[in-house]
Length: 110
Image (cartoon, rainbow, N blue to C red; front, side, top):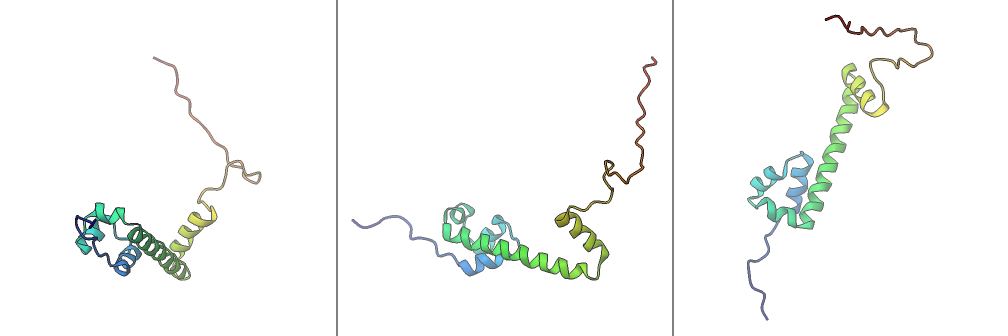
C-alpha cells in the first residue's frame, strides 16, 4: 500500500547548526527556514544539528570572553565570579575578618 500524506519537509541541517551557533531562538529559525516550529521540534535530525550549533556558539563566545579578559579587568572579574566562585565581599565567617555586623532591632514602642 502506498504511503499517503505530505512528503517530508527538507530541512537544511547545515543552516540549522549555523543559526544555533549564533543563538537564534526556535522562532527565529522557523522564520528563516520558513518551516513551522512544531515541524522542526518533531525532527530529531534538526534538533541534534541545532543543539550542536548552540553548544559551538557558546564555546566560541566563551573563547572570546577569555581573550577579552586579558585586556579588560571587568571581564576578568566577571569570569572569576562565574567560573571560580569569586565574589566582591569576603565571607564574614572568615577567621581573618574583624568585621562586625550590627542589626538594628525595631523598638516595640507604640
